[in-house]
Image (cartoon, rainbow over all chains, first blue to last red; front, side):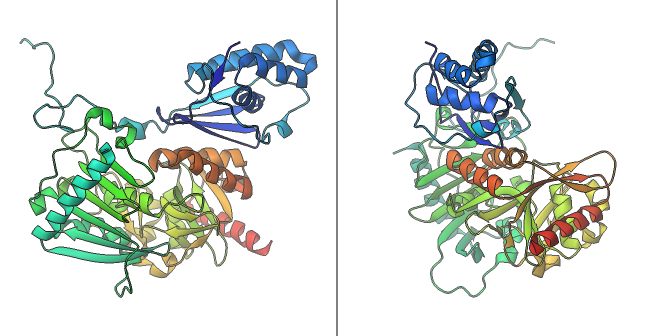
Length: 150
Length: 354
């Protein structure tokens, strides 16, 4: 069983008009999840496992079950790669009314995950650095490195 | 004591010392119905930090203020901030200090990648005490964006109260009764469109940040100024006389004193009945086309949350409800700003007639 969960300190999300907006707070990136992606996201978060999410969606789309299972696996891996989901079991997520099911087309459409990086500027003002022992933070430590030769 | 609480204690103590050591100025303003007392140590900071709030000035206050901000700088007051009570591990993304909670928050503003020119400043705030402080290293380190939208962190911490009230990164423009939020990241045409609307006689509650009452669906003005790229001034030449040259202007952006030039147009909250996403297109006439709630949420939520962090989950929930409830439009900006004004005017008239 491949378990997954969301870290609410790092990721916040909302689904609207069949699209899920995922905001990764730590990196300054955000993502749009469309087509079947919103429904798969909902299932992954609620079921907490790739297999259970895939089985639930395959039941809803029985004529394309093999493709559905493969796409759920692929998307789950992509979400983990982007740190939007974390491997391992997490706390139970209470069932909530689906915001994506009403948008499901008759024919399964593979999920689309789009990444946006235009807000990363705000996090580049990052003051974390090595501190000068005498002056304290935020005074940076004197630059160290190999001596330069002329 | 958590790092944020230690910061609050240290910087409010230093602020009190600076206020006692200098000739201080006290100003009362009203924003979104909240009465705010601002005490500035020394003569330099009021010109820099209070001009954009002049539209909200309350010269005849009655009763106690709801919240107090103390503002000081080291160069003018001679009061050095305490040795920073934090280690690097206490300082998170965007400068937020660890240990902040529902009461106390602390934030370092700065960019240590550019240590010679950054805005070396700290904001601290306690909700329970209704008291905040802003320390600035030196008045000449206050950048143009802080002069145009001053005390934003303290205003965010003190005024935002989701799910009802929150600061959002948006402009708001209105006609006689209806209005719209203009939403999108910097460079989308939001400010130029908002300024053109005001120049044409419409009302506004700001070009970049507004205080949104999500329950009443109105946007309250925060700042009386707008920020324009110098090249945009040619698109709205009527505002040239409102460009501030008193330290509020530099090469990157012009600061336009909209409330000073047209006070009645920024005097009241603007109703929020639609979400409009300006988008610059290369050719064609400017036109409004229907957008989706998802388009609106994508244009509004990330830029607001990354600039004005707080209870991010609650904030996103409020913005999503707004995007579900209000119609969304994309304003394709192909022609001069007068076309955008005409399109928005038509939209708001149609909303009023509906």
